[in-house]
Image (tube, rainbow, N blue to C red; front, top):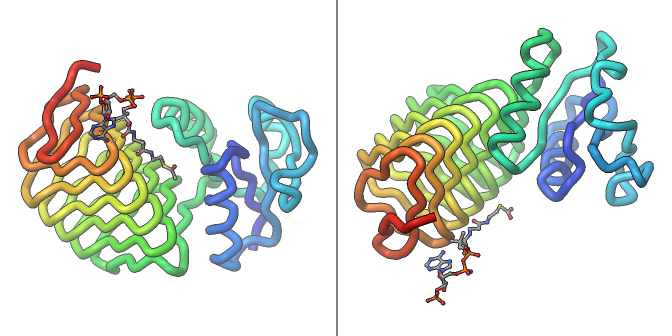
Length: 208
Ligand SMILES: CC(=O)SCCNC(=O)CCNC(=O)[C@H](O)C(C)(C)COP(=O)(O)OP(=O)(O)OC[C@H]1O[C@@H](n2cnc3c(N)ncnc32)[C@H](O)[C@@H]1OP(=O)(O)O
């Protein structure tokens, strides 16, 4: 058992803490955040101090999770912590179904009711949000956010830093590039190139 400190006390941080509590493998759960105007988060968890001061809390029994929704900021913070060799954890809600034949990178959050089917690889620092399903043989890059209710069919690839908006559906075998964004409810039926923004049914690429 160890103490978990979560960096980022916004809505996503609260979901991460709730997941960590459900896992029942941490002695205590607390936060650091850039906003230190309060001492408690949602009247439930302690806010220990400023996120920039995280090294001051890096005792041997502490492990870390970065819960920042923005993919770029999450990447910056997590890479900084990983570079020091600090103990970063992966959070998988006990109500998620994860195949033993899949791989999940450090610092990723797998939320309740998500399903990860076999031979799928998930990178580091990802968010697989509530009730998302990632089917067989997917390759999901680093710092990707798959929003609630997304469904990815088999053999889908998603590049680093991409954000699939809530309830996006991707048919089998497609390749979604890096830093792509999709709108809520998009149905992706063609590959999407790097840095594109796509939305609609079927999803079309739009100007940003
Ligand atoms: C736990 C969590 O909360 S995780 C976070 C999950 N959140 C999401 O997934 C949010 C995804 N965001 C969206 O879908 C947004 O609507 C965006 C990014 C696609 C567009 O947002 P904005 O740039 O603010 O666009 P805006 O709302 O002004 O709409 C512009 C036009 O696009 C249309 N539009 C907006 N979203 C969509 C969509 N998802 N699909 C199709 N059309 C859309 C609007 O109807 C509007 O059309 P109009 O010009 O004909 O009236």
